[in-house]
Image (cartoon, rainbow, N blue to C red; front, side):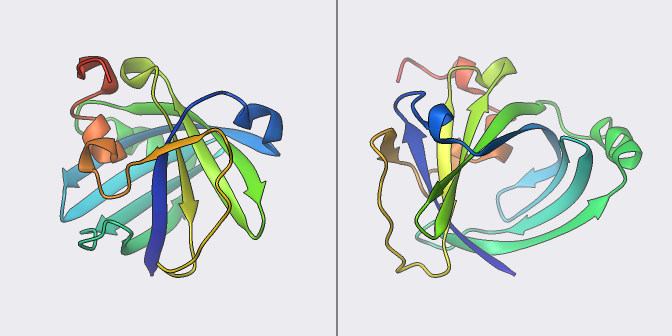
Length: 158
C-alpha cells in the first residue's frame, strides 16, 4: 500500500481544543535504514509492526505495510530496537474530509510538535488551520526513524 502524506511544524497548542481524540504512542525501530524501516509501535492498548519503503523524490509518498501484533510481543521486540525510543501523544483533528494527526513529542524530542495529513493523491488540496506552520514534507530529519537517532534536544536552536 502506498502512503501519501504531508508533514508540517505546529506553531501553537490551539489544535488541542479542536482534537476529537488523543492517543499515547511509544515506538522503536528494529531497522531505521532510509530505504526500509521496520517499526514497532504500541498505541494505547494495541501494537503494530510496520515496514516502510523509501520515500518518493517529493517525499510525499512511500510504501507502507502494517500488521497488528500482541502488545506483549511488541514489548519484547522493543527490547531489540535500536537506541532512541520515540514517545509522543497523537491528537486527531478533523478538517473537511481529512484528519490531521498532530504529534506532541516527549523525552529527547520534547519541544517538537508536528502535524501530518494523509491524502488520497499527491494533488489533493486542503484547508490549512492557523496553527499549521512550515511544511517539512520530505525533510528526513523530521522522520521519526531519524528523530530516534538524532533527537530534537540535540538540534541547534530552530
